Image (cartoon, rainbow, N blue to C red; front, side):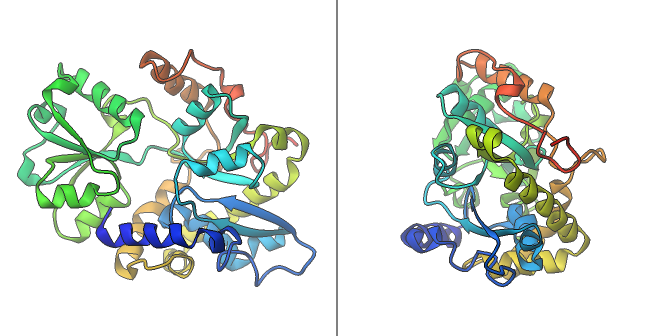
Length: 337
């Protein structure tokens, strides 16, 4: 993340109390007083991954569905899944790996839709590092964000070319992935997103090499998912179903009008760079819809089980859970209800 984005995170953390009320993010213009309050905890600060959400808010699609939607920005990206498990929010934006880990820890959560149905996490390097493939990582310094399972990503990537973690220097830089790479303190980063850090570097004219982890031997997965409390899915699914249907409208509208989607993200965000945000939105929008013409939000149960098996093999979870303990597609548009 760039230093300006680090400052954004700090300011958002200080303002968490106000954000918890959905200040500036709720569907205030579209609400008519009879809409059902509905709170969504975002995974991080407002960014292009949320373009469908904020386009739907700006165009009143959630209000059309009878929902008065407000969003919350967390001070800790791990907080939303705990909030939704405790029933403090209606939905959370989280990550497939986090859902699998949460269920292994006994948290009662269920993924209900894929927000970004493909990996964004990538191995990113600059030309000067001379990294044309994983074999070139030997002897290099790799910056990571300190997310534990991403060390297992790196170990798996290296193992496929006969290397191990002992053959590289791994440094945890937290939010400082971009500064580490740009300063030369790291030869590559693992943990940046192809549509965020990858675009940032390209906009700087640095010609980054960006390779998503599923092209490096990591089982494919849904980077961002909507998560609900399991009991809520069973007892009161209709508002969630309505939210997802309105979100699909917002996402397709965003894809059809990238300029308007960019403005929706910029209006909702705090301190975002307009030029960079527009470039990131352009790169992000095609990633929000299924690439094979499949149904919006669909999660492939077999893919989830393969990814969970990878976690089990790495010792991150105790056994491979069946997909129906992790997700449901029953609340997607067109599914039976």
